[in-house]
Length: 279
Ligand code: KIV
Ligand code: NA
Image (cartoon, rainbow, N blue to C red; front, side, top):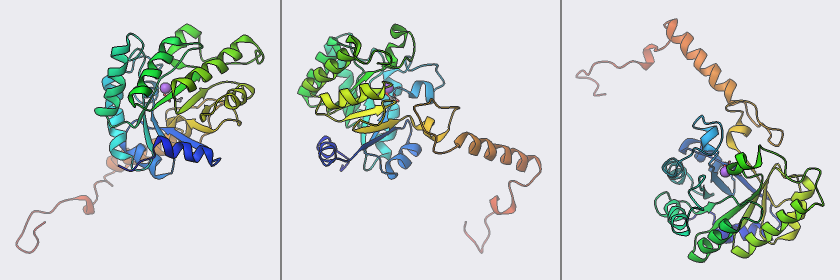
């Protein structure tokens, strides 16, 4: 397979290209995301809320994540496929963490995995160190980390009103520790633009921002937010399409057509086989 590799990401970063990533959870969307030219497709644990109807990312199981990742793997030809490790699929023990990361690569065809790290999150830094030593390309994720939502108390903007505080230094130090542990990129979620800039200047691996402002090395958005699928998106996003309206309109047209006898039309019906034709 000839998909985007870690070294391709590095080459693009070193050439000053801004990196792009979008999430996808299934094959048809992944096909379009891939063909549209992103560098990376993240099979996010945001599938829990954006695809499976949960309120947050925590309920996603390993089996669901692997199934989504395998679907995206079958569809993606060019973009790197990153499997997002679900809540508590890593962290309980080194053994289980390595095993689960390995399943993304071996069973689901992922090219890399992503793990969230809390400020000074020594446990995940050690796990990431092990994963990269073993040859599993790993993407970091700091700032707002949705899997710790109940710990943090909500989706707060990291660094707001505390730009020069210990909390920001802690974020920068965590990014530096992740770099040492061998991550090939770091997602930086919902931080002030100032913090995004500080972290980006502090490390020599590409930072991929979501709600992290303009001074980062790449951007990622949740696909359903940018497509206008499943309701209103957050301020950090930009809506590039209105799929909710498109889909609703199509369904209403179908219902009307069927009720009014307009569908199926003659062209949609099958004739019995006869001597002349054999279809
Ligand atoms: O799961 C997800 O969609 C993510 C992105 C927000 C980076 O982790
Ligand atoms: Na995620």
